[in-house]
Length: 375
Image (cartoon, rainbow, N blue to C red; front, top):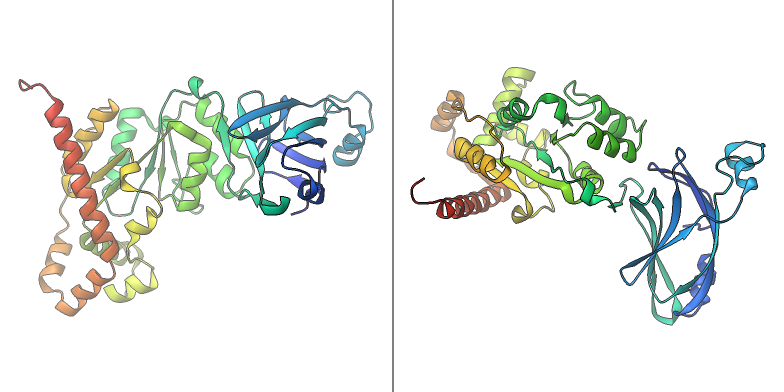
């Protein structure tokens, strides 16, 4: 990674450059010594920006204090003097006490961390690059963003559409954003622009969520996008989802493709070719069930909705889910070998589902025990 080359970023930073120190300088300096940090940064819009170094868990802020007309000419192709962005440089002598993170702060509200540097043995430097595709934000105005945002991970064929419509009825569709993929007409325009076309940055999406009082972002959200949304929403994120008995969920998914997409293969072929094994586990990969704000159980839909209403102070309506007769009939006549195959291909989901049911029942009994006996 070249510390002296221009860097681009999809966030509030347009371009930045660290002229000094370079990697060799850091490798040869003592752990506790003063090092001159020299460079420049250009932010999008007329936003005040500061250099930030974090050492031992403490953030240190340094103003932009140098005029850099050379940057204005070279990067922005502007020749006029006294341009509003001309004071874009920084030069500060900073005492280093060990490992540190380097980044920029916008408007005294938000920090984007750029690089981490770890001192190894014999003053070697290990550079860690934050994934450039995931914008890492630290919200310094969290007290002003008190409204929770539910990140609804809608796993296919788990009654997620019913729950989504209940959220719409309770909150209003204008306060919900949808992410069902780049090709889906349901995906919200702002999500299309920021996530898929990348024509706007993460800061713009964050500001839109705040300005429009968005309460829910929901859809068939993959792992990368879950991390992305969590980085934007910060502590306001509340992950919610529904899980369904895995064999019936898999069969429901199969029949959905048969009747809506004219799929002609058998269930084994469907699982293999469509990559449908353990779908629930894969969509919740790296997420502990206990860390989710709410996990509903499709087979206990109304109990789940009631539980969600109690913990979230909402009033989502309950409903009666239609039982799919095709699945019932299919299970009665499915060959034992085929059923064993479906079970084998969903072992992780079966374990996940069992744990989710146990957790749900424990939480539900915990809430019931807290209610007055007269209720």
